[in-house]
Length: 225
Image 1 (cartoon, rainbow, N blue to C red):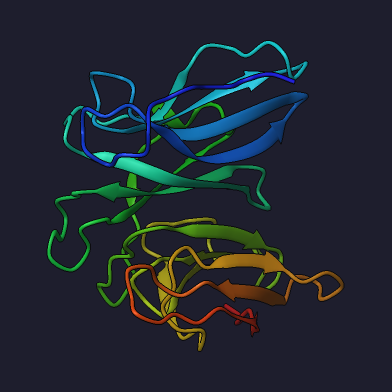
Image 2 (tube, rainbow, N blue to C red):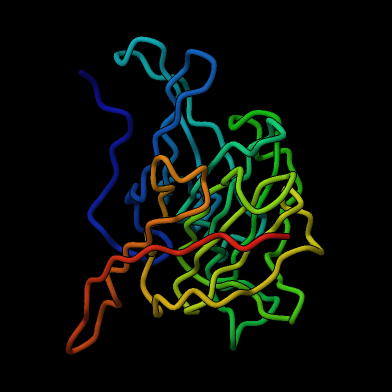
């Protein structure tokens, strides 16, 4: 139908010009395509989106996470609507400074009334109550199970555990819990139908740059608040 954005060849070096890591979301009659964008000379990488109502004509590039520090690289966006009507937007921040040894790709998130207004929202570090900072390749979902506010579940690419939040993303309420699913790069999370949101399908593609990796699927039951 149309082309959203065009960039250069895959290259993670700042100064290269690829666009990648897309996510598609409908909101109030508009289709938004969110992606990591290295074409802006002001940013080594940023997350941006463009919208359309006809799949042919696309709006201008709008920033969602663009750091003043050129060397920082927000990427790997996931966006989901929570039960309170707000949207939570999680992403990794390459070369983050909060804990560069243990969490060099620290996961941050923003919460907004509209998925097209994240650039104005506060960037919050995903720091669990035990002090663990989630890092790299987040996948985030919201399920109505687990308590009166439901549960935000985030998987990262550095820990076997999940990070859950029963309070719509309250920064002080992230708890690290066992998943039993092993460490994996961008593990996919999906609510299994007809389980009242209590059972999550976890697909783990393993890790890259290893001599051997294992693809696995399994279910995980949401714990109560």
